[in-house]
Structure formats: structure tokens, C-alpha cells
Length: 118
Image (cartoon, rainbow, N blue to C red; front, side, top):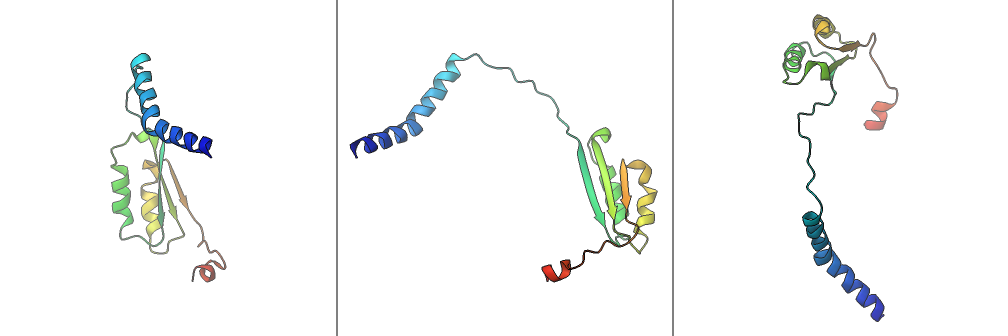
């Protein structure tokens, strides 16, 4: 039982005092590493899902195309679920400005999903 007590005291002491002391000593002893800094722009895909959004989709596409991000690193993917209000025609008008577009030919329906959610 005494051994377990001293192991616990040592562990708590190391966590609060020993480990910070080891880090401080290593920081002083080891040479400083130079970190290469620069702008990093990963490839990003902006996915816009649409169903009967003719009233707002053009504004959204203009906003997405005006983002301050390198154009070669930004992919705008518009997924339209066979809209019936002309959204697909608006999206096709912007098709040459994005990298990819996908327009569903028919409404995608998942049987049983409404029952599971409702």
C-alpha cells in the first residue's frame, strides 16, 4: 500500500512539475528549429445542393465565384435534384465558370427515409 502511495505522489509530481521542467530544459538545450512559413491553400470543394432554388441560386453562384481563393484550388460542385422551377437552366449558364456540375435527370427518392425520419 505504501508503494502505491509513493507511485501516485511521484506521478502527480511529475505531471505538475517534472514534465514542464523537462520541456524547459529541452527547449534550452536543443537548437531552435526554423519553420518554413508561407501561404497554404489546400484544394477545396464547395458543394451546393439545390432543389427549386431559382430565386436564390444565381446570387449564391455569383457569391461562390467571387470568393478570394485561388481558382485552380477551388472546385464548385452544384448538385441539382431535378429542379422544376428553372434552377437547372440558371446553373447551366454558369457551367463554364466552375470545374464541375452535376444535374440529376430525375428526382432522387429514397424509399422509407420519410418513415424513418418522421
